[in-house]
Length: 594
Image 1 (cartoon, rainbow, N blue to C red):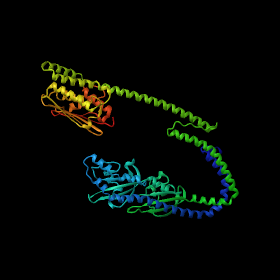
Image 2: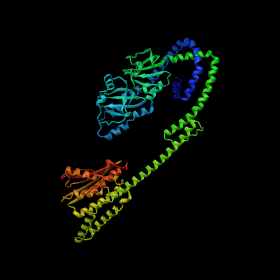
Image 3: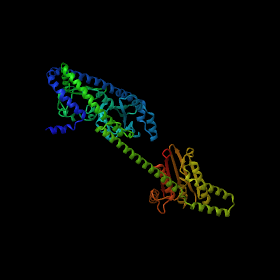
Image 4: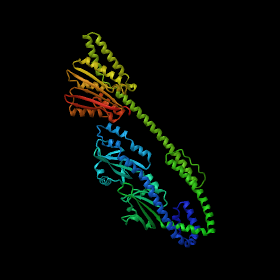
């Protein structure tokens, strides 16, 4: 028997052991003497506790009413808000108009800044041209079939419900739900204002007794213990057998102890359902006050108890101070602070733990430094490999064009005069000079277009003006944008070589470049022979392969890979083509995400 007791005592903390010893030595004799006096004060103290609990419930009721009155007033203002009516009922043509309208309407955000009682404001609407965001949400079948939505739309009064908020990771909150009519447009919507759970919990957290705020569906929306929030009151042991909790006082056993329960109701203004406040206090905890009163007559015993408490406190504080210091150091390490060094001295168990703690933190720091160095080396290696890959891909220029161009110049020079030849040679020189600058980083769009213009003039000279023509549609704002070199020229070359290969007359290439910050869009179109769907899919697979394939279109593949590596997957090439109708190659890049 003694061994079992000692085994259980080993699981009790030191400070608790000290207080247990104090209770056994000092409190037991005093309790025996005070039983008689306590029984006389029992009913008196219980009556006082009941009166105090009633006052607390009434105070909570006033605080709760004051808290939810603010959302009620704001909902009344929003029901006649012309700006809100315009935002909800406007039929928008595109996403940009929606963005401007939502950004221009900031009443919801201003209310959230001004009043801490409100956690969130949302508006559910059937306007399908509005885009879902944190403030305006389009109605879905799931929302329309929910009970809270039906309660609101059928009655027209405010409904208070504990519902989930899809903009807050689907957490549930007490919310004001109110139908808003727009008579001018003959439409309506539902306004949902979420009450701050922190404000609600603060109302009941300061109470001495267990206190709940319950909605009309018997869901706990605020409690001293946060883990109870969201549970049905019927899920608690003491309430499992009772269905209806009306206003009044009840006596029953809570957690196995006789307790008193006080229920008060609050029906907010313009509301169809009410909220209830429930306060629970255990009778035994109140009776313990009578025991303390009986101690007043035991002066001698009190002196000994005070002395004992001082000694116990001093002893326990000496131990707990060192333990708590070590605990604070551990908490700092848990938050990521590895500069902690425990300075607890001594050769007892606490001192030994302190030294072991310091060794552990030192080892963790060393491991973290090694991992950080390894990650830095890995990042630098990947960066260098990426730069080499870009330069290698950018350097893959098809030399056949230069050979063909020079041969055409030579033959033309033989048959004609030198004036036109000089112009073509000058253009070719510009191209070669620009191409040699590939490894020098980004170039302006204007320089890239100069290379393309020279290339097309040479090809026009080569094939003849009746066979090849070209046009530029370039926005002024796009000329100063910086892009990787040789990004557009290979696409134009592909259009000439492959797209217009079978075109004898009236071949045309159009280069369109538009810039709407931050998006730069480039489209190269030819009126050549085009491709069927099978050939188009084959080309798209070839340019998307991570490794080059024999016979693939190296120029397009390199451009596609460079776009993906530099601007992300969404920036790659898009090709549209139809047989005998020509081909369009385009890409769009976000200039802020380079």
